[in-house]
View 1: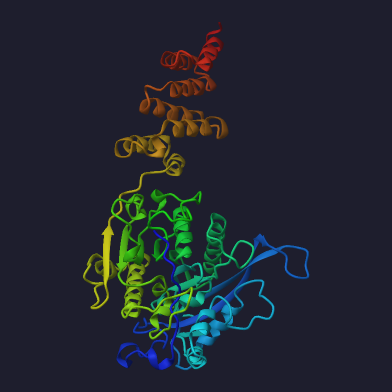
View 2 (view 1 turned 90 degrees about the vertical axis):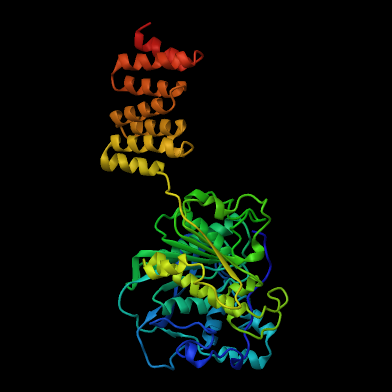
Length: 513
């Protein structure tokens, strides 16, 4: 996807964003027209340290310290009397402490999180925004049950979770636990668009997942990812390398086409064929490059159930929760004046991604029917189009083969590979080098001679014109004491490759010449 510079939309005074009372009377004044789900919203901040990593020593110390992680968690809460909700200023206070080290002499609201608002709003409007009630009650009692977890990846220039607080509250009201942390560079607050800081964010999100799953109200079975901008890049890598993730949503992230930074493709864990979960990508219609362009992840991630939602006439900033606020002034370096339908477009996106998670984290059949009906997402005045592509069955991997051997015996694994040859002749599992490496693992490292022989025989069967599979099979027979079978296979190997010194030496040794 082409990089599109645009940043969070700002907030305006309370009177400009009150929703009609019959639309969302029970929701936050900062939600626009989004209607709350059946739950109230709780919020808590958890401060922890990842001691498996270290960052530069703080002032006054000559030792590096563990990496601090601030985990923001929104969750379904018990019903309560109204009036205890946090003001928006509470998020602003938290945001000011998100980044380390904190520069001396800086005032609250002057940094990444709320700074753009302070620069683009009058003092009176800013005060009104900060005084506005959110939907969240800090440390509220948790609703009964265990709830699906959604982990959110923040974006470049939107490093603090404040940029997406409203959608996190909204999802919590609909029964999800949403956990996130600020986006911070490898060793300082500076985030570079490179593979080092991409991996840093991936590991931060892994830490968040591990911590959140220890909470008694989080379901250990259902896990979704939601990522914006660079957070979407990190989440797609995380989804490719973690088979325990069940669904993924990316918001205006540079993952659809190759990005100028080479991210996320430069990550060693990036492989479109490893994306095997339902994926919804929501982006600007202008992000689609010319039809001649190659390499769309939407085309190559063939083993994922894919949804592509294109929104017309919006900017990068309009994919943040700040876009729910109308009447904003442009902020240089962050956002232009938003289009007239930006707020309604974002509300539509929030509703759609909530139904997507309902379908794939809860198994909600009505939500699946909603996703299958392209007209369902249509909202008058909101230029949104959706394309869906079904997933192809994913072929078995090398790991699947090894597990099949352990669970059902080598015969079942061999039969699985035979079937794969017809369906996917280019798959890694049935390649000569792969089977050869597997055979030697069983022969020498795991000491399973019979299993190794069966794998080498499969390799001969699948690659009968290649000399090396016969050579390896001969070696396995010789190791197991079956001399005549070893001689026969070494002779076949030498017949196919008369220059093979290994086969010649083995035959001299076995035949006693």
